[in-house]
Image (cartoon, rainbow, N blue to C red):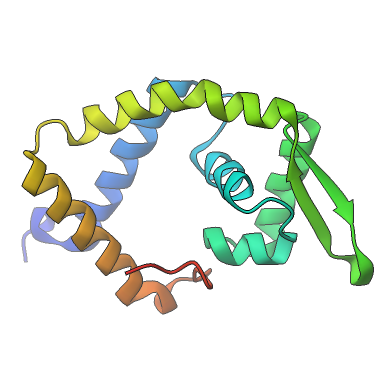
Length: 149
């Protein structure tokens, strides 16, 4: 099988391209994974850290590290709950950071998908989402409860 026809290679290259486009669009102050955490907390404020890990498909130790970094930046607050769980809430500064990112991310998404026509874009996103859903349990950190198909 030709390397350039192998799904794993193409997915790795797509990830490289997506991360590069993200950094070009918004800089290095926030990473794509930090952005995912911030967006999830914007959509579901007050969730605990373990639930967050499942929603964004990260292991709990990585999630704890990311949340500590976001808290140090002043973008989230971690409140200790019973049984050592942590409730997570965006701060006004975190909300402002997300609002600052939106125009750049809209432009980035357009740049990434702009060479595809509307039907190709819809098909690409639909098939990519289906691929992720169908293979979710093969991940080392499967997405939990937020899996969409």
